[in-house]
Length: 116
Image (cartoon, rainbow, N blue to C red):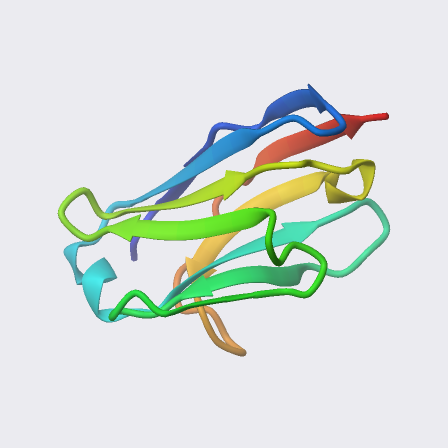
């Protein structure tokens, strides 16, 4: 079973930026569409961005125009560039395969806190 290690979170002021990384310990990473998810306190985990194997990206309406997902199939890593952060972006961010039932076990996530 692959391991997912998310990093890059932190505390920033509204309007700031962060870049998250997710390292996947499995070479089969390149055959899957990958996604970034987030879970805020008291809320369900939600998908925020997806990137296909071919590089096509889709975003939740709440982050469109502010977040950018990318991947490096050589490094088995997926990234999330987050700009113009808002307090409502505060959550624990996770990566996993895209789709209704993610394939890998969830990692520990990385905390993003945006202060107003």
